Amino acid sequence: MAKSRFLLLASLAVCAAASTQAQANSAFSTQVSAVVPTICKVAHGGDVTDLGGSFGLGQITEYCNAPGGFSLYVDYAPGTLVGTKLLVGQNTIELDGSGHAAITEHQGPKIVTSDITVTPGKNGFDSGFLTFGVDPH
Image 1 (spheres, rainbow, N blue to C red):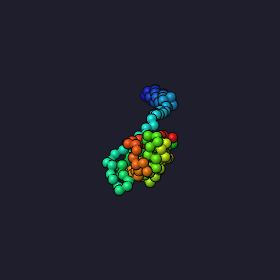
Image 2: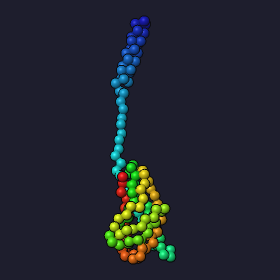
Image 3: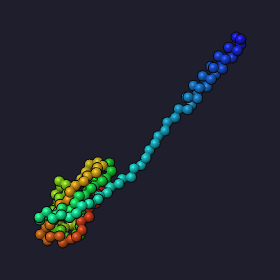
Image 4: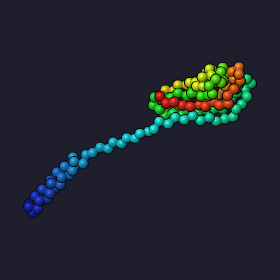
């Protein structure tokens, strides 16, 4: 009986040592990474409304996930819309006929929805197109 106890204790000691060795050898780590593309969009919705000298153009929604932020701009036909005032949210700009104007700068990723109002310059609306865009930083 003493011999069988010794074998049993020896077997348990070997199993414990093997288990400890297996745990030491099976330590691992996993690293997961992903690449999220920069997506920037602008969407316009709503009807044109006459505000008596100005016109409501509905709302614009800016979306950009660029970590460095983004800029909202407007493009239009060069040589047109001189003196036209464009109000986007709390930002007012006066178009100079260059065909491009910066409207807002945002720090970090955001989703922003703003009302748009336009007041014609002395030549009225001599261009039918305003195109809004977003540039990531």
